[in-house]
Amino acid sequence: MLVQPYRKLARVACLALVLSGLAGCALQDEAAARAAVRDWVQLGETQYYFSRNNCAAGVFEIKATRISSVLTKARSIPAGLRQLDDNNPVAFEVEGLSPNMVSVQVMTLDQGRGNRIFAAGIVGKDCMLEEVSQAYLLALLDPTSVLIYEPRSKFVAVVDRANRRLFYAQGGGP
Image (cartoon, rainbow, N blue to C red):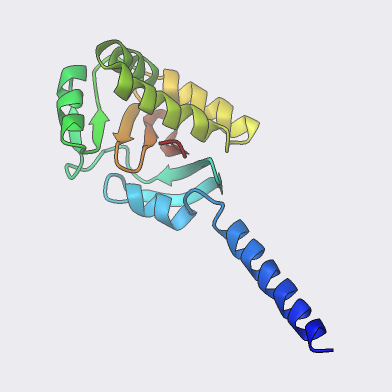
């Protein structure tokens, strides 16, 4: 007779563990993503956010297209790679180069870092709806957009100056 109450308690405990495990499946929540970029740009409203265990993606309105001096801006690919040597986030503001072209040039000079930047951007894209993904692609191809890479948290942010928004993409890899 004493076995029945313990079985019920064991089921409740198992259910609680499963539910707490599911709650931990998101890679990064919206508040943490906003906090990660808020010192770099003046954020407005969240236009989109989704996260699960292997990716996170967001689109945030920006009130101004200026990137804060708190974030180091690299005017060349080698200068950006030097910043990454110190594991610091960097905004690649290379005149005439879209974020996509910046990524390609980083890949050419440093395949390991290039792979990490591509992985964050591509895996993060998996958390985007189709229309968000298409807008992200356009921002990646726009030479007026700026690519930011944060090597510790392994995310990219693309400042889409033309449309006054910031795309956030994070992959959950090593």
